[in-house]
Image (cartoon, rainbow over all chains, first blue to last red; front, side, top):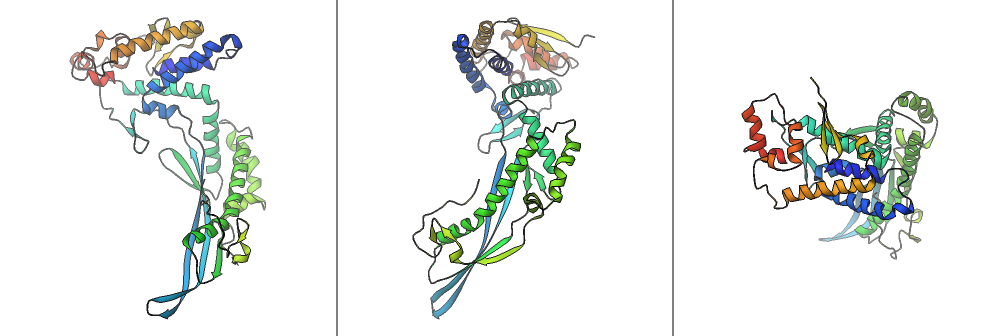
Length: 287
Length: 98
């Protein structure tokens, strides 16, 4: 079935097929290809799909309050203090070869199956499926896999980026941003407002890191690095960037650990001062 | 010993080597697009007939078309005949079918 799907994809991607004369045939082929894809084993479908890059931006908020004790069981709020910092994680998928497995529907993870038979040649089965999967992916996505591999290797070579691996991704972690403190004096405050304030404080840092990351990824992907010449060219092109005083060096080395304290008049929530009550709810910045 | 065999399926040639069984590109480039679609359709129909009840009505995989063509390619020849037959026509044939 996988070979038939491969044949279908190969025919669809064949140059010169998309002329008007072939429109009906192309449509039939596309329908056929979808039918064949639906019949594939879920574990094979999982490998045929193209995993994307993920950016996770977390906001960490430390929270404290001060009260005046007025009476037994009665406290009066004096102030709230926040300490906000951010951290960014970049998830780059790494490409694994096919192993006989089943896909767990609940977690969407591959569970390896037992392959301890002396009669069935499992490695040949896996080899055949893997080569077919690779062929389909190269037809559908071009050099996407190679780019992911180069990106993965390049980022591992940058000093300051720590990383760890899980089943499907290499996760690069970037240093915490500086701690931004905030004090508001007042008798009433709500938790949702505190969340909005910390989101607002974190937003510039998230935007800055995100922009730097996207620029870096674009630079690596468009710099013509290949599996053969990648490492030398990478060091030539990208190392000077990290030795100069740029936003990239900030990203790697981290930011100043503590920043000057902010007050309500420094923060605008949807055009209103943070102290105002007419503010709309905003989602936490998370990509 | 010749380690490369050819498996013919409706004009599509599969090359059976030590490490894999793969469709030979030349064999399908020779076919017109309509012929390719007909082959795919024919194979899908046959496979549907085999599994349309949701189970196999015989544990002898040699009676099922297409499966009997490809099964020998994935079975080791250097094991006892009785063990091999378990996977072709015996209590392990469902494992082979999967």
